[in-house]
Image (cartoon, rainbow, N blue to C red; front, side, top):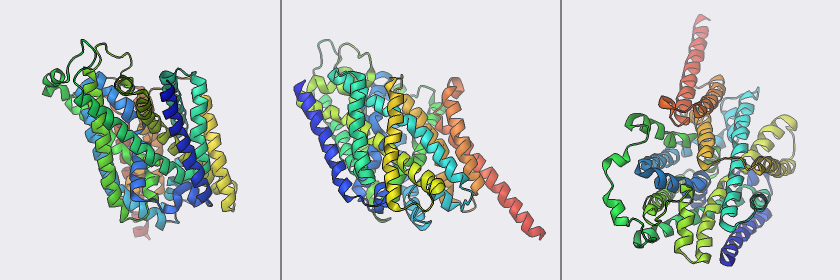
Length: 479
């Protein structure tokens, strides 16, 4: 236990040092919120991946393979497609347009500038959607980190929640965007390396517990029917496609596109992102599926397979460093969410509505205070220790953001005629449909909420834009 504590403590201290380092280099709101658009391609790629895949890649996906088998391989395929499409098509356009349209620092500010919304309704709507989804996402992430500490070290849940929360909030508060991106960069490396080490250990270690199935026997039993999604081929693949289309609407990923050093660097970022995601997710598949062959008695909680294998195979100090990869994945998501909420409150509420002429220093102070405010709300919600699983976090946050922001960002970048009213309607309809759909799963409704939400929002955007442009054209013709 001493070695586990030591390796975890070493990791946490290194994150704090990074935060303090970038505190000295952060002097403006642009530095704090978007890193002055000077992010190296490798840091942009890995920080986006780490903040996005989160603990789901180390616990949720291996757990899904451990419990449900190879039918969950489709998640890997659609996720890789989403990563490539996002970096290939969305990233270059968003990087250029956010800088050209008033040097927008946030997604709500970009949308306001893109549609020349002087009423601020669009900016307000997008800000509210961002804060609602991210506040509960932060709470669930803090809770997940505390559960990890509780199960690994036997520390009281509330004590673990306090320790983990202080570390994450500290380096986010101090260093802002640069601290978050660079910590996420190292956390991304830890995530991939941890999964790869455990996956290779499983592949090359043939003997598990007495009475367990061998890896060779497990592989021999594979057949084509194992790949069939739970909902069937048609509805199953449609539902799983949400892992691809949902990528276009994740604010904590989109801001990485906005902050890459140059458009030319995006190609390098795309290559790094695809390679990193491939290594991470293939390793997760091997850990989850081949992990079935190691333990004679099935685990009570399949999502702990990665942690259980790490503790069973490696020296406690090495296991501690590997398990720290889980904490890294959780932290890399929470810090990004805190920062997006912070920028939304400081730029899209305070500067837009409270003090339009506020100085840069004043907005920077508000941004730091916003980190504390959102963290306190998340801490309060997490303190109740609600039954929030990784799956529910992904279903609500990913589905809500993908269905609301996804269509709006896509059409705003590639359809010049899109209107402000269509953008507002798309945000509202996508959010509502995704939430309602996730609450009423069953039968034909057993679909990832982002899919029907994305479709509904897209149809609304197209219909309203066509109606308004046609009406405008008819009015001009009449005159």
